[in-house]
Length: 563
Image 1 (cartoon, rainbow, N blue to C red):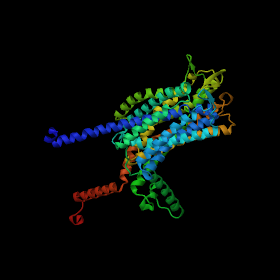
Image 2 (image 1 turned 180 degrees about the vertical axis):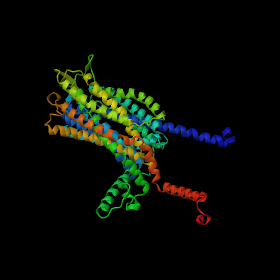
Image 3 (image 1 turned 180 degrees about the horizontal axis):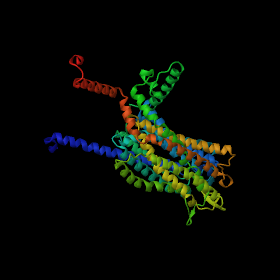
Image 4 (image 1 turned 45 degrees about the vertical axis):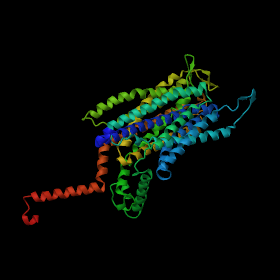
């Protein structure tokens, strides 16, 4: 205290900087812990959902796959909905508490649904307790819905991407961040797929209380963040509704102008500007124009996400119907997902070295679009290999295998024969997901980056629901042949070949437009700034000054003409 009184200026500044740095570090650690806990519970729900739906709820294989994909899609879309609710209808702190309650309620109801009501012993008496299938399914769907809403609130409010302070980062730093962020998330999922799936399938299949325990731990950390005022509050200068409003206003004005009279504009979105009869400012319209340039990129990610959804659906069913015995030990079905994660864990450090060399080379205009093209091609090859693996699997004789105390007839082919298709999808994820996140974040103005990531989430969620639609259409259109309940009685390989052919066309389509995103960040930023009123005024002032300088220095004009 004596030193502070003697040197009030320097010591006060140092005293303020140290607590701020400690608070930022504390906040970063809390956000990372909440993020890992949320991913832990999410992957814990997804990892064995198909096995639970088929053996406990009596679902057909295609129905269980659709439920899993719809849950993943809903969990991808709910952050966008909850972000809008937090911005307009409900306060952020209240919504955090509501979402944490919903998350804990959903994760606590799932073990209740799986509890063995039919076999209970009380006071040496055997009591038969039966929960009807209808009520069991209602509780199950209610638990999934509340859990997905809670997941959306956590991702949108507690752990948004903008909470990591990426505004001052360049493309090299951003790509490095996205690479290591997805590396850490996948490392967490690998732990879940090995541990939780084994516990649910073999050791304590009806006792999954570890998941709600982690959810409760996440709730306590979040409450601590709320009390410490560490919940991130984004800038309120852009919104998803404003973006949709600009698009619909431009379409409405464009149709009216086309019907009655037409005025030439540089872009159809210019019709939403106030000086063209619209209701939005020039800044809002120019930001939306920069975002719409990414819509082709987002559209080509839908089918890619459908291919990725084969891991918790089609690939899971293939693994469940293969021989899981390895050295006298029955592997968990979801443990095969680790094979798709291992390539990502290996490739990320290698890609970091490649990216640092490419970004440091001034002669090379590095763009991650080549990663996306190669990743899409790898996903198409993975689904094609899955079709050939299915044909190969059905050639083996059938044996009995016990999964979750249910005896199933499966192929005697080892599940490790399916490893190539998992590896190819893991390579695709390592290449595509960080690159798409970089393009979505970097190729728009700073005020539109959150909206751009929301649109990427919308299209990724659409890919999950499209996968469910493909499964239902293939099952209904072929009388269950292309996506059968018993794989050895159907033609699942035809579904994989059909999806692989669509993915090849999707890859060629993106490759044709990939050049748009090579140097778009420069032209987009320059055009956005150049179209703002302040930038236009500066341009006019510079032009007038230059014109006056030319007049003063011109020897051709006479003094009378100069005046």
